[in-house]
Length: 504
Image 1 (tube, rainbow, N blue to C red):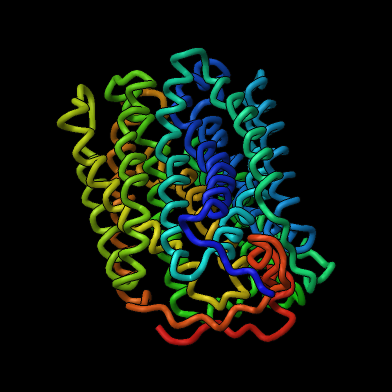
Image 2 (tube, rainbow, N blue to C red):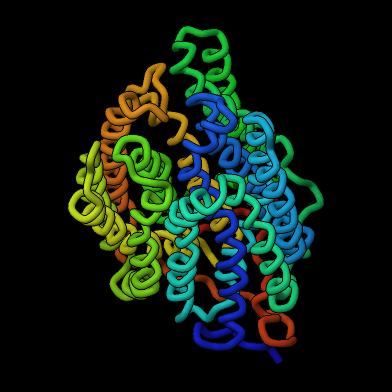
């Protein structure tokens, strides 16, 4: 007899949500928590503007480059097993970050952190998608977005408190006990699942070319302000980046076991959702990198006050994301995915005016609330669309691709935005250099949000096509059906022809 999928309000559902939210939050928090500590890190370790950018981008680069491989490893060796390895790896790397004595050591440890994040992140959302009954799936994803979104929005608050409490090293050391709790919950309550049909080959060529492409572009754009566009190291890095990404596309088209099966982009809704993801998360990457920095360096806020300034985003995501997910399920994803970025863009234009002597209550809080309301409307329907645009057997692929797109967008944003905003050879910890860069960057981020709204209005359907029926799973204990459902891996999706859902 086949056990049913779990419901949102069941005890089993709460355990699965707790494990996935805690695990995802580790990676989410470290994507933003470091931002509030950048001035302190710069004062302690030096490194200039490029060093501070690489403190952020070292983590983002390895995470974005390897997140699809992490999903493949989970499908082949067991999603729970790889998830637990990733959490443990992340904890050890966090310890190295907290003990780093030079900027180079910190950046290297951040790269290792990103590898751990790439192992733990894909399985969390794929487990969530596969575990809940369809009627509760959007609500569960909305709850995950709201609770897990604490990682992005709570990070600056947590970082500010820890920096003022002790020093910047605490923002990394605190990950160790949290990771231990994640491993305990996951070991006891998350069922193992894997794809027995996954091929033994892994897409190593895809991993190497993708990493070379992202790494080359990131290094080239980061070095551009200091060395100039005609510098050999800038030109070579950018050429490696372009060639790497072009080669990646060729490799994935020809591979028998691609990490990124190109056939899935035949689904218009899936392609549209990932385009929106790229534009919106590029904007978010710039916002969370620069806002807390500007509040400290330009507006004169303390680290704790700068972190508290973004706390309303956390509260709004916590309260409203599940409701936004349910709304998107009821009226369709197009409207919230169009209106959400428009609202956020208005908040960013308003936020770009934050300058010297800014008041929190009149200059910071109102635009932060507007920005947060836009994210609440957007994030849950966007995630649900990215996962729901393909047939159920491709849930793992959809989760991995959408995560990779979001990480790559944030990575390139931090590298490109200061350059595009006119930083030149300026210093991000100098108020005179940062203030105009911040203002121009927030305007660019608003434009990215507007572009995301336009893409959603054109490519996102009013309703997603119906799923194909889910394969039956063997009988077993509660959650066994979800654990054993044969979701296609990133590798074996190319073995049979890919048939994404039509319509939309």
